[in-house]
Image (cartoon, rainbow, N blue to C red; front, side, top):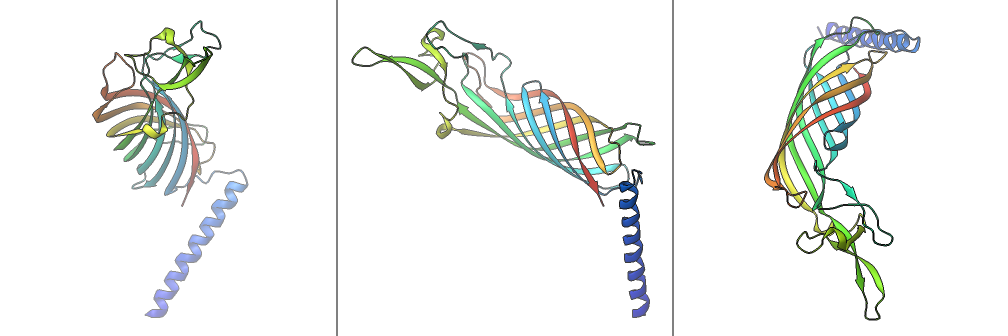
Length: 251
């Protein structure tokens, strides 16, 4: 009985090894074995309606046409009314007038992807839909601007100060403050998000990932995000995006 079990295990191992070698050899020869890879890892870059971002995704097949997904992404979030301006003061640098905070988002979520049109060969395109739900963190850094000061001797100098719409008008600002100013005053806003997308896979081989992805994202923050002065802080944010995804698949 033990010998039969041992022989069976050995047979499974040898069969799997031969299959793996034949698949690897086929790919090396420029052929596409077109087999089902259980694991997938990909990276993405995307532009959304309020900024840009990057994405990492890990996927695993649940069935032949359905995958379980885990993703992490980072992106900036701008306000639709952000416009760079400059003043007539000496050495003026362009800045965004009225901006209270610069916002960076980190998202992490789980989801499922379903293949709705499977590729018949390497020249065709596979169409997939996916959805995600998860948590997000919004990091809001106060916006600093440069203003002119005058010392005791009457000489003017520039000073970086936190923007206050009640104190500084557009004429009193000479430019954008250093990027690092305000890091010590960073505020974190926890939230939730949901995403739905449609992707078009066109990689030349079945063990590669190359896709164009487009979709919609809903973000909700219990404590509203303040980005621009004289505009309401936002609890609910909707963005559209399009991106490029690349990666690999394995058994």
